[in-house]
Every structure is written in C-alpha cells, then in structure tokens.
Length: 119
Image (cartoon, rainbow, N blue to C red; front, top):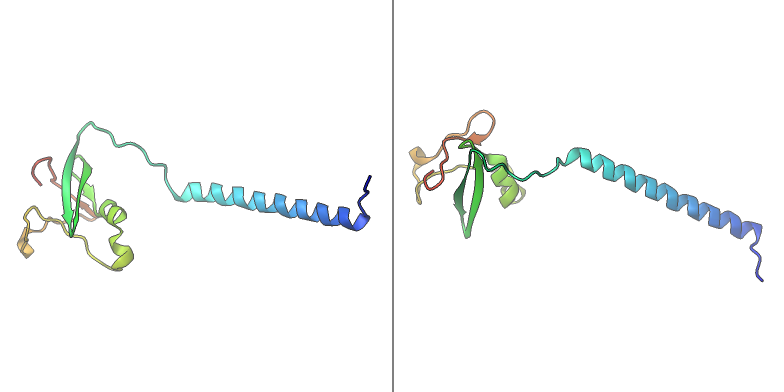
C-alpha cells in the first residue's frame, strides 16, 4: 500500500483546482460565444425564392425573402471581405454589366426586387 505525502496531496489538489478553473473558463467562453453568434434558423419558405449568384468560378443559389438579399449574407458565404478588405459587393442581372446595370443597395445593405428566375 502506498500513501501519498502531504506535498503530493497538495500538488494533486492544486492540479484538480486548475482543471476545474479551466473547465469553468471554457464554459464561460462557450456561453459568451453563444451570445455573439446568433442561432441559425432554417429559412422560411413563405414569400421566399431562390436566385443564382455567379462570382468568378462560383455559381451558388441563395434564398431571398420578400425579394431581398443582404450584401452581408453574400459576403459571409463567399468570404469576400476577408481576402479583399473594404470591397464593395454589387449585383447585376447581366453577365458583363456596365455601371448602369448594377442593382442599388438600400441603407440596410440589402438588394431589393430579386425574383426567382429573374433578378
């Protein structure tokens, strides 16, 4: 039978306390993260449509609600501002747009008037 020394008991207690403290910090960090990242909800199909966005080699479908799509949704999907900080996202319904062919963003950063099979 081996007995622990008082020093080893103190070391083990300190280690257990450190583990408990680390677990508490982890739990607090997870709770804080949950407040920063909103829960992802499935999009409603009522009043929604799907539009196709093409960028470079990408060809992706996006769900639009009420004919609107936020530029931030596009940026989150493609990660454009990560590789091109300060970039401006512009949408057009024509393959090679001129300046007059771009849709206008509203003050909220949304493109409006998008329709399935059209814009």
